[in-house]
Length: 88
Image (cartoon, rainbow, N blue to C red):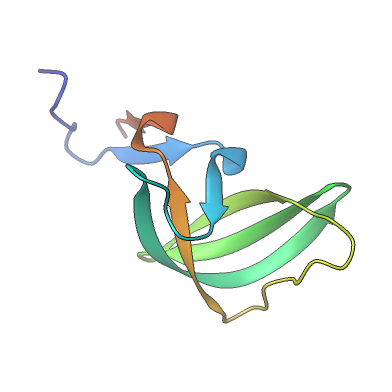
Protein backbone atom coordinates (compact mmCIF):
# COMPACT_ATOMS: atom_id res chain seq x y z
CA UNK A 1 0.00 0.00 0.00
CA UNK A 2 1.40 3.41 -0.98
CA UNK A 3 0.26 4.91 2.35
CA UNK A 4 2.39 2.62 4.54
CA UNK A 5 5.74 3.70 5.95
CA UNK A 6 8.34 0.92 6.25
CA UNK A 7 9.39 0.12 9.83
CA UNK A 8 12.47 2.14 10.79
CA UNK A 9 12.23 4.35 7.70
CA UNK A 10 13.49 7.93 7.65
CA UNK A 11 11.86 10.85 5.86
CA UNK A 12 14.45 12.68 3.72
CA UNK A 13 14.30 15.88 1.67
CA UNK A 14 16.72 18.27 0.00
CA UNK A 15 17.96 21.16 2.15
CA UNK A 16 16.59 23.72 -0.33
CA UNK A 17 13.07 22.25 -0.02
CA UNK A 18 12.73 23.29 3.64
CA UNK A 19 12.14 26.76 5.08
CA UNK A 20 12.54 28.34 8.50
CA UNK A 21 9.19 30.09 8.43
CA UNK A 22 5.52 29.61 9.19
CA UNK A 23 4.03 26.92 6.97
CA UNK A 24 2.09 27.72 3.83
CA UNK A 25 -1.25 26.00 3.32
CA UNK A 26 -0.79 22.25 3.20
CA UNK A 27 2.81 22.26 4.44
CA UNK A 28 4.22 20.29 7.36
CA UNK A 29 5.54 22.35 10.30
CA UNK A 30 7.93 21.06 12.98
CA UNK A 31 9.66 22.81 15.89
CA UNK A 32 13.40 23.19 15.36
CA UNK A 33 16.39 24.51 17.30
CA UNK A 34 19.15 26.23 15.33
CA UNK A 35 22.55 24.60 15.90
CA UNK A 36 24.66 26.76 13.60
CA UNK A 37 25.04 28.13 10.08
CA UNK A 38 27.48 28.35 7.19
CA UNK A 39 27.66 30.87 4.34
CA UNK A 40 27.64 29.30 0.87
CA UNK A 41 27.65 32.36 -1.38
CA UNK A 42 24.04 33.38 -1.99
CA UNK A 43 22.85 30.59 0.32
CA UNK A 44 22.90 30.34 4.08
CA UNK A 45 22.98 26.71 5.25
CA UNK A 46 21.50 26.19 8.70
CA UNK A 47 22.01 23.13 10.85
CA UNK A 48 19.01 22.48 13.07
CA UNK A 49 17.81 19.86 15.53
CA UNK A 50 14.33 18.45 14.95
CA UNK A 51 13.14 15.67 17.24
CA UNK A 52 16.72 14.76 18.10
CA UNK A 53 17.83 14.51 14.46
CA UNK A 54 20.21 17.01 12.86
CA UNK A 55 19.01 18.39 9.54
CA UNK A 56 20.19 20.94 6.98
CA UNK A 57 18.16 23.84 5.61
CA UNK A 58 19.43 25.97 2.70
CA UNK A 59 17.99 29.48 2.68
CA UNK A 60 18.62 32.27 0.15
CA UNK A 61 20.78 34.99 1.73
CA UNK A 62 20.61 38.71 1.01
CA UNK A 63 22.90 41.40 2.47
CA UNK A 64 21.47 42.93 5.62
CA UNK A 65 19.22 39.97 6.32
CA UNK A 66 18.95 38.80 9.95
CA UNK A 67 20.73 35.52 10.68
CA UNK A 68 19.29 33.03 13.16
CA UNK A 69 21.54 32.39 16.14
CA UNK A 70 22.53 29.01 17.59
CA UNK A 71 19.99 28.00 20.24
CA UNK A 72 17.18 29.99 18.63
CA UNK A 73 13.84 28.20 18.25
CA UNK A 74 12.29 28.21 14.79
CA UNK A 75 9.59 26.54 12.73
CA UNK A 76 10.76 24.17 10.00
CA UNK A 77 8.26 24.05 7.12
CA UNK A 78 8.21 21.87 4.02
CA UNK A 79 5.84 20.15 1.65
CA UNK A 80 5.30 16.47 2.47
CA UNK A 81 5.56 15.79 -1.26
CA UNK A 82 9.11 17.22 -1.39
CA UNK A 83 10.62 14.19 0.31
CA UNK A 84 10.45 10.45 0.48
CA UNK A 85 10.69 7.62 2.98
CA UNK A 86 13.92 5.60 2.93
CA UNK A 87 14.04 2.22 4.61
CA UNK A 88 17.09 1.55 6.77
